[in-house]
Image 1 (tube, rainbow, N blue to C red):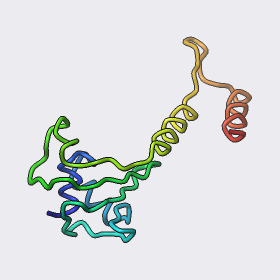
Image 2: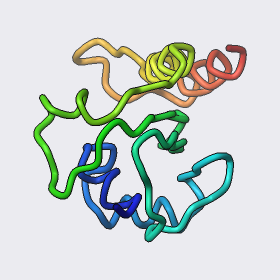
Image 3: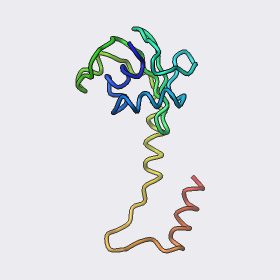
Length: 122
């Protein structure tokens, strides 16, 4: 089975086009080497996928021909991604979110500079 089709079928990517583009862009690796979208995979392969700021490691448990429901994804793949990656993703999400009370309006130039200074210090 093609790697792009499998990544789409197990819901790593929303569309098959996105899976193919990730392969073309060097964001999908098997055994440390970039793979083309047409690369054939087999059960037991470990795939490394770079998505935005997280690097996922996935082990292929079963091959499927069609896209499956979210309930069945756990039967088809094993997530080997270290928990530190998910923690880092959560921290980045929290850092990029400023809480402003309703009615305060947009931040002033001074407020924006203080926010930027605070983000850079972390």
